[in-house]
Each structure stands twice: as structure tokens, then as C-alpha cells.
Length: 233
Image 1 (tube, rainbow, N blue to C red):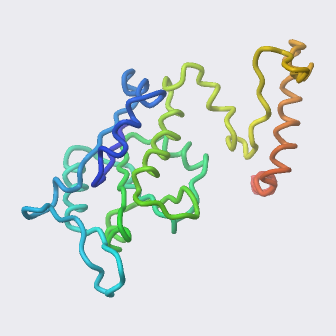
Image 2: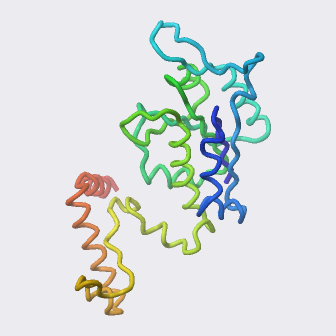
Image 3: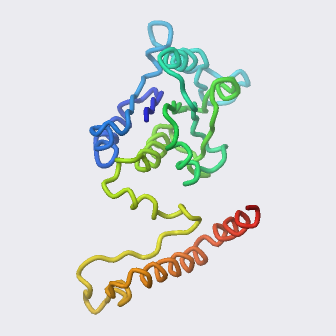
């Protein structure tokens, strides 16, 4: 899978991709991640990428021309399945969306800044908008890193034990059950006996019960979504 990230601050997230699972995925050629400076596609001595809003509102707006040039330059080299724009006023990002994106071959992630991008970028160039939460951050770089991380870890070969990603929270509209490791007892705090029993069937049953219990307590809406989904099948 190839992910091209368009940004005016490539150095802000460059180091993020040099560590952990993302870095190993790139070393194993499971994923390609390329950062592109939008200023390289801007005109003029100062490589301007933003300007005042026509409405006269406070704050600067990212211009359409350098963004369009960057996207078109990439599209001349290959086809892209999605051009993604992270923005707080989009639909919330979910594990379901991450799963879908992980099946694609090439995607572009456009990082906004200032007051956002010229609306024509969203109307004519972007194919998918994603919100990582109902809050505003300085730019789209952190959101791009979040999306990239959540997608790459799902790619075959990215994680040594591929079944690990399949048991993450939200994969089955359930939060993950509790997990424990050695020692089996610490300061009188014990690991549940069932996990030490070796009975895989009973352990699986316990984990599912715990997942349902935790989800019902913390995110009951997920269970409602699962029931609705089942009724529509």
C-alpha cells in the first residue's frame, strides 16, 4: 500500500514514521509512505500557500492552486483510490473505515492548516473526509499520522502476529476485554483463574463476556449498532 501525505510541515510528522510498527512495515515493503511539501507546488518567491478569506473573516485559508498542482502531479504517476481530507466537520473516523482503507492500494492524505482549505478543494479534489474527533487542532498532520497508523497496522505482514489486530477494540463493535501478563499475583492482586486454566474454550467465552460487559458500561451505543446491523442482514 502507498500513502502520500501532502503537508506544509513535513518535518512535523516525519519522525513519527521512523519508529515502531510503521517503520517496520516500510522496511518490509508492506507500506510506502511519502511526504510532500505543498510549498514545492506554489508559485512565487515566497512559495505562498495561503491567503485571506474573501468573507473578510479572521484567519488564513489554504489556496486551491498549489494543492491542485500537488494532487495532479501525483495522479500523473499512478491512480489513487481516495484523496482524504481530515477535518473536524466530517463523519467520525471508525475502525470500520480503517478496515476499508486498508484494502486500498494508493491513497492521498491532504493536511489542512490555518482556517482550512478553499472549499473548492473539498468540492472537486477530495473524495473522502474524516474527523478524528470533535475538536480542533493546529493542522491535519497529527490526524494524518493517526489515520496512517490505524491503517498500516492492519496490512498483512505489518504486525508479527496478525491475529492481534483482529482482536482490537471496535473490530466487532466491542471494546477489548482485560489483558494480563506475569506475574500471576502481585501485591495480592491476582490474575483471574480462568486465564490460567488452559481451557481455550472457556477463556474465549470469558473474554467475550468481559468485552460485552465493558462495552455496555463505557460505550453502550456500540452494542445498539451491532443489534441494528444484525437485524438488517
